[in-house]
Image (tube, rainbow, N blue to C red):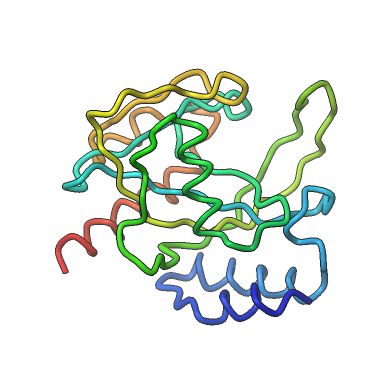
Length: 194
């Protein structure tokens, strides 16, 4: 068992039933699998996502994912790195080209947890079977005036959208993500209004 990950997850306080259930499953994965940070675990593995907002929290940065054929948030595989907050920022920078991405506050805290289904797909010429991503999300901020340079290998574009309009950009095929995005928008507003 990876004790550092287990302790990090135990310290997180879920605020809804989805997070309570998903957190329990994440703890079970961490107990049962030593390779939860590696893609070689074909059942599921950890990922990290930055929920990237502009300075006043009114806009969210979305990228167009090739696998999901939909606009959505950034994020990616940990590939052995258990510094989830660093993985989240790195993935955001790689997928958008924005060097200004940083955590909303330091030390970085988990904003939310979610288990995300991944459909079967082909990546770099190899078939990837369906599995789940055990995702930790961190609230990040970036300068919306900085030019965007999306990562062609994974995305078809990047853009800032008003937070309340995120759902308008999610394709019919990826509608299951709406509840996750609504949760993230709600949590962000609570932090800004605190």
